Image 1 (cartoon, rainbow, N blue to C red):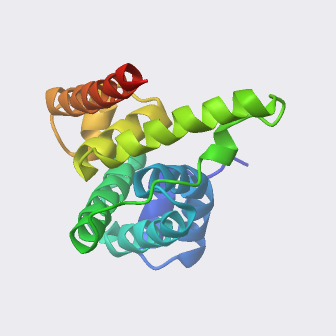
Image 2 (tube, rainbow, N blue to C red):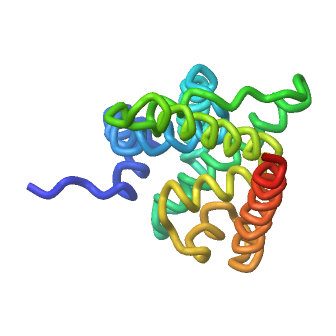
Length: 186
């Protein structure tokens, strides 16, 4: 028996079928969490943001048109939610905390000196990510995380292909500039 498509599940969920929405949640929860983690910068906020993304998607299911692919629509809701939550948090506090990834990125098979160097490099990259606007940070995170084309990123963000590509390019240029300055200070 073939599994129902995301589009079919979304249509059913929009008509009140909670089990269909639960299946969508299971299909997308790890991907949404990773986007939220890299956008929010810490696990606690990422968990809250993930829940908020699914709540907003559920609330907006009535606006989804089943004749279009579900995934770009859904990721647009996710990215808009992350951008809005990021802006809200930035207005409440100017210094973001971008942590929680070090233990995932550093291999325990390396020696203490190598881990220390990697931790330092990761910390600098995380600091550089903090300086990106929520719009640029979200575009870069989704592009890297989902390994999608600029055209697909544009669909997810609800912007033209050129705007999506420009956001990623600007984010990468800003990161490179910050990290290059850090490197020359050593």
